[in-house]
Length: 454
Image (tube, rainbow, N blue to C red):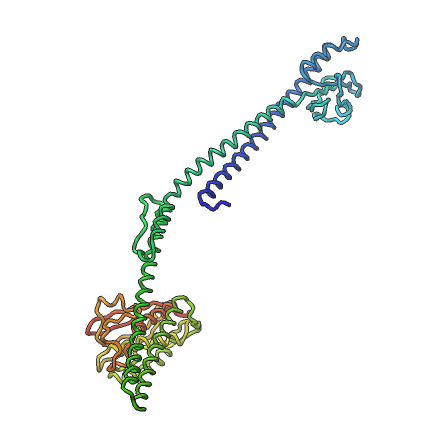
């Protein structure tokens, strides 16, 4: 079995050439045979007419029984012949087993028949008042055709051997850039994904392959960097509550405690466990969204209705932080196809982000409207804003503009840097896009676009 692409391509090239050569040889052989036999038939007819002329010239000798002239002529010609009268009487027949019955009774103008141990081609011609049947041995034609076949039998294998060698050299040269790419790719490991293969100077498929391979390596490098950063950040986020929990338990065991202290310890432990559970749930949701395995329903959803529900839930949080959460333009009958629970989470995450990073007395506003064939959502706040250098990373997992603004004793709603990442994944899972604009000291605005129904 040929495993090498070079061998398979060479074999394919040789097989195609073999088919072409055999087809050409067969067509040439059949054409030559047809032409030779046609010329041979014409020659037999001319010889039959010439033999009739000799018969008439020697008619008197034939009547006297002197057949040496006709017999000598046929012997020199290597032919077999017979002459019949118009009534079918045999006037002359050459020595040997001449097929008299077939020449006289069938009415054929040409036929093939065995005479002795050889095959003759006969022509039946009417010349004057007699019918002449004369045949010549086909051996001369068969020898020519056999020599032609022998020539093909030598020429075709030699050409195929030459083609195999030339084809293998050609294929090896054509695929040498692929071998070079393969060797370069084999040297690239997980630890050096920044390395790239060399792009050939020539244009064509190999150059396109090298560019595609480098693009793939770039995506792999970014994916591994994201995985490493994701693992590191997840470990850090989970390590903090575990360390807090362990410290509180060890202190309680060392110092001893009463029932009230243990109750406080259990409440704190429950809070840390809840925090870890929230992180794990978010990580699981992100993994499901990345692998397209999240069980999202597909049904018509009224975005204005979902926005009203999210506003109702966020108003309480806004009151505790002195931030007003209010509706903007909520146009009715702005419907998209999606999961109402997931879309509600999009609203909740954006509103919560606006409340958390707002100033006291500020406000968060949400609007929903239809624009052309899209549904638009806008959540804006009057908070502290986001630095320009942080905007490109805002949707990265575990990214926080200022980690000092995260969760603390004074800030019980601090996040883990997963909310906006989950929001973007949910938006993209619904075929939408999300963008953000911000000015420091002025506020931040998130714009979400979904394809609309109808």
